[in-house]
Amino acid sequence: MDMDDMILVSIDDHMIEPPHMYENHVPKKWRAEAPMVVHEDGIDQWVFQGEKTSTSFGMSATVGWPSEEWGFTPGTYSELRPGCFDVHQRVRDMDANGVLGSMCFPTMAGWNARTFAEARDKQIALVMLEAYNDWAIDEWCGTYPGRFIPLGIVPMWDVDAAVAEVRRLAGKGCRSISFLETPHVQGFPSFLSGYWDPMLGALSDEGMVLSLHIGAGFQIIQRAEEAPVDHLMVLACQISAITAQDLLFGPTLRRFPELKVALSEGGIGWIPFYLDRIDRHFNNQEWLHSDFGGKLPSEVFREHFLACYITDPSGLLLRDRIGIDLIAWECDYPHTDTTWPESPEFAWREFGEAGVTDRTEIDKITWQNACRFYGWDPFAHTPREQATVGALRARARDVDVRRMSRHEWRKRNEAAGVGVV
Image (cartoon, rainbow, N blue to C red; front, side):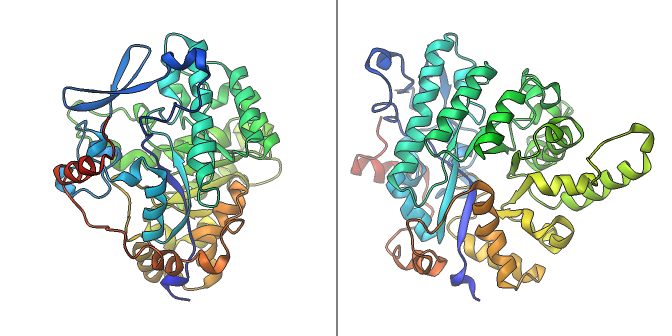
């Protein structure tokens, strides 16, 4: 096997929702209430129920920019690589990167539907949340059904409405929902409280995955006032251990033995120590009477969780301690951590350094584990021989993957009428 023979399915990418996304998905009587993008003071902003949100493209859509232009500055759609918000161009960028499949997390809506959860009028917010999901599944994923794993969001403010949306999403072929990794730090009930049990039960019934992306639980880290932003970016993966602890040592996984949980972008290097620690704790602290149904807590962890990484050479060295069936690869397009357009090179190099040479192991990590976990057939629309890194890149040789400044992108896009609000 060589690098071009790999099949890559990324279960952590992101879309920058296009300004026109609501045009075809909101009932006529609500159309004037839909979120919209306005261009003001040189930046593009989403506006919903009178609240403006500056789009910080400087962190969430840096793909194609030189690293010196990254930051927290707002910007415009015309400054972006079109693959960030145009699904046709996204697929072209996936081809150029040798990536067959992608699951895309929200940006404008927030990973936990924050835009709608914080809205004043929850009736209208629910209409727009449902319209958002319809766009994401029917339009973004539906335009290229063989390239995207459908992911939805739910109304955090009403667990019964969340259950109803899970059922509705399942009927549309959605495979997962994006949710807060530590809901209690955002003022919502915790997983341990039992409040979310009806929703978790619905997910279990429908065979859908609870995808918990890092970044929404930053408040759980009590930083010194002087601490730089590096603390959050470096330590974000450690929050995945806290999330796993809440679910594993709380009642959740005992109540829902079929529940599947993906720790999106959580990395894998922390897992061997965590599994050793929880088993030692369980065996040593018998007086706490923890109950894992006659199993070790590490065994229960392996039954429920999928661990996802972008690059993690130390974790790959310890893949046998983690469990080869638990590990899944990610690309993270178009964020600062993405390995695009050289994802195959990054992955292949780390496999070599970690001694991952067996095709069975490589296939599990790059596509099989993710596709099994999410119940997504990668070859339903693409024959296997056309799904490899080499085959996809062969049809995208004309894709320009050079980095360009925001100014250069703006000139190019405006000349083409692309991304202009």
